[in-house]
Each structure stands twice: as structure tokens, then as C-alpha cells.
Image 1 (spheres, rainbow, N blue to C red):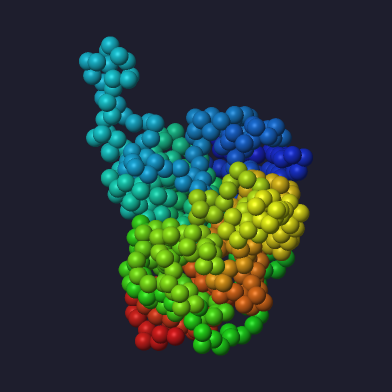
Image 2 (image 1 turned 180 degrees about the vertical axis):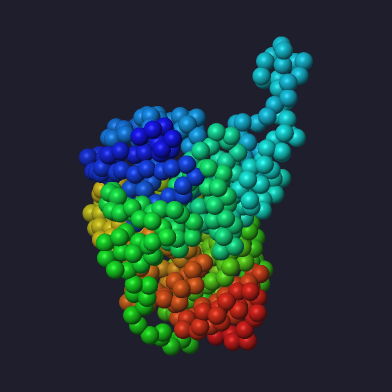
Length: 534
């Protein structure tokens, strides 16, 4: 093989174990300059571990390194930190953001690489006396944003950005590095609206045309077909198949990922049940001040035992509704549960009223990342409801009931098919989708009267998605728990819900039965209100 035909990246027989458990087994693939490779697989298939090896993440070194070889331009490399990978021209944008909230987009894009002005004092005090060259910083940030080809204000503070703009800032930071040759994008569109996702796919094509290779990890399989040259499918730590994107299909990729046929409509097995007369949750004129998801005047009645869906385009306020009611962002208006007022801006009051919430922000809100799965699932019920506690001396002394904690954790590990080494494993060691299942289990353990679930399948692979939706459906039907599910995926809502409310500009634009045609929901999403209120 001559120098010209050597691939940019080559992985040879890469393997990895955690505590004696193999998570990668004999992985081989190559990537050429400017090539876009789609990396797909169920949560826990090994995708993130493989990218952690490529990027020299500390967790790999701290757990005994890896087997096999990583080659750049035909030469073996051994990255011991992300700095080594960056020097070799590899950039990575992780699922969870790493931005400084009080800084602008431009400042974050050039963070730790700020252009400097020297002064007379610099001769005496060295680099410490240099000042930031703001003009050049702004110019370089705009160059990176232009290279990406997205709409982003370089002067906007990260704390004030909608989530899509944060994602663009992360990616712009990576491509602002002049040596960048390979960019790894881990679920970059999971938090984006449809329009923003289209912009990002166009940006990936632009980067490819400039000779920058891209490894694109996503559960949205249509995006793989839209933007990738080839697809690598992983399952249980192995590469199952390598396909040409132009010659495969969503159904083939899904089948290879999960090892079985995956039907799009497999979740819904029952008819929509009639609406009960009793109203369990009544919301009137709710407003919520959540950046990027402001709620302005939301009114709805949720009936006993129903499965209500709330949908709408990104940034229209649907995410703000449960966050406001549960006291995570400033809110006003009137909320009643079974006719009794719920105090807003007080999370404990909501939990004491038997409301529960599975947040879309599983790492920031949903999990105790450094604690075990047992502690994550049992702790809220222990703290709020005195469950899983042994009481002595008439309740004067309380001690945790380890047997009951282990039993409830095992129940949900089995029911939700959570991939873990044991119930003692720390939450941060699980893949994103399995972390989401822990959040679900934690809420089930509270046995709430009403459960809010926000984006429950975000970042969850196609096989686990049906399982999570089925668990919610059974929880609603078998246990009679009222569920309000907020989701960006209309088809997901139509599979699960009895009614679906569409939110536009912070308020309800209409409510339709889940069996209504997709185009009727589409009309509501673009702001055409429906006269139908139930």
C-alpha cells in the first residue's frame, strides 16, 4: 500500500474490558479523508467506548487500557489523553455539553486558545500581562461558524441559548482548530429541532467536501442514509456489518442492530380507551420562564387514567410545561391535582402530592451519577415516602432495608432490560439509554398518581425505544397511573397516547385523538389552531 492510499484512520483488532467484562471484541474498520461514517448500534453496543479509545479519554487508561491498534496515516498511535488526539487533528463533540454558561459563543469557541495582544508589560511579566485580542477572537469564531454553515450569534451568552445553539457552539469549537482532520459527533441531532438537524446534516456535507472525515453516531437512522458514505453496525461489542449507506435501508440497519425484526408499530396493541369524567390534573394559564422553551398561557385538563401526549416543534414550550409545574423553573398560573392546588416553584410540594417527573436532562436532573443503581432507584422513594426503611423503637430509628432495595432494583433491571454488570454498578458507567431507563425505574418506584415523562426515548436506540414505550403503556394500563408524555417524535406519541395536545408559541394550539391523521397534527404545529378542545 503506498502513502497515497493509506486510510486516515484504521482500527485493528481493538478490544476492551471493564472489570473482566468484555465491552469491545476484535473491532476493525477504516476511514478515509473526507469520508462520513455512520456508527450505529443499541445502547451498550460499545460505540462510546470505541470513541473513548480513539479520543484518549482518561477512563480508558484508568481501567487498564485496551487491546489492538489505532493507526493514523498508517502509523500506530497511543493516545493517553484527549490532548494527544487533538494534536493529531481529532475533535470530538460529546452527548453532554461542556460549555461555560456565563461566556459568549465566540469565547467558548476559542476557549484556552484565545488570540492575545502583547504590551510593553509583557516584556517584563511575560504572557500573564497579555490581553485578549477580542477583534481576532471574534473574527476566528465567525470563520468557524461560517465553515459550519449555521445561524449562530457569536455574542450570545451560552446561558441564554436554546439547546440547538449550544450544540452548534460545541461543533464550531472543534472545527475552529486549524489542524482538525477528523470530527466525532456523538448524537449531535438528539437535542435539535427538525430544521436545526437539517442545517447540521448540511454542515456535515460541507466539512466532508473540505476533506474533514466525520464519525457520526446517531439513533436517527434516516440521517445515516441522508449524510453518510458508509455504515458500521455494532452489536454486543462487535462490528456485525459494514454497509454502503446508499445500498441499505432503515429496516436492514435496525435488524442488524438488534438481531431481530423491528416493527414500527409494535408498541400499540390496544384501542384508545374512552376518556374518564374525573379530571386528575387541571392546569390553567400556566407560564414558565425556561430559556428556549418559554410557556406563555398553557391550559389543559388531564383525566384520570389517561395517557396524554404533548407534542410540538422544538422551542415552542412543550419541554417547559413539566419543568415549570415541578418547580425547576420560575412559573405562575394555577395547577390542581384532584381539585387541590399545587404550590408552584416548590419541587417538594409536587413530590409530596404524588407527582413524579422523568426529566429530559437525565444527567443534570435525573441521576446521582456517582452512586449505585440501587441508590438511584430507591433513594427518592426512601427520602419522600419512607419506603425501603426498617423502623425501630416506634419509628425513632430508621435504617435502610437493603434486601428491599436490592429486590426493587432487580425488578426494574429485569423489566426494563437494563444492561449493567450488577445493581451495585455506578450510574455514570451505564450507556445513555440505560441511564434513561434508571430514571424511569426511579419514578416507577415512587408509585405516583401522575407521572410526567419528558423525551423518554431521547438518545435511546431503536430496540430499547419500543421496550421503554411498552413499559410506560403497561404502567398506565395495568396500574391505572395517569401519564403525561412530552415528546418531539409524533409517531411515538401516536403509538402510546389516548389524546395528543400540540403546543405552539407556549400555548395549546389544539388537542386531537392519537388516531387523527399525521397531517392534522402538522397543521397544528405550524400554528393553525383547532376548535376541538377534547
